[in-house]
Length: 108
Image (cartoon, rainbow, N blue to C red; front, side, top):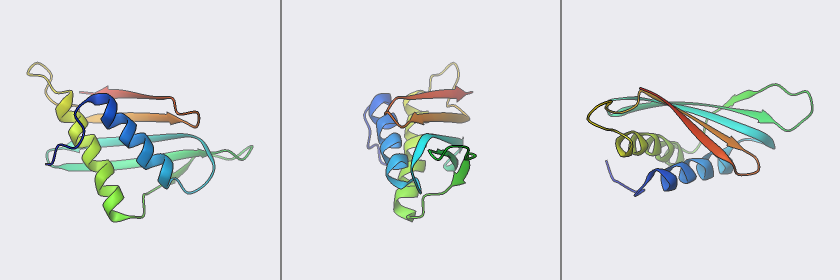
């Protein structure tokens, strides 16, 4: 695995950029969950359309290279945050607001 991001912040910011640039419409928030299982990463993403009364909608990044980069971000983040005590996380829940604020929650 190529290490592209040197720290947690740069990795999370890259994830936010990739998601924001590829969401299929106007949105108020995006939630993306990456499940890390060895060398495999499963990513599921949902966004809240900004249209009043709209329900959250799942989406996938159509461009294969960009989708692979998002999966790589989850993998790199798992390794950046791993410790001998807890190992790598099993899931990361990444939340991005339209104003650019983000947070990540981890399941070990």
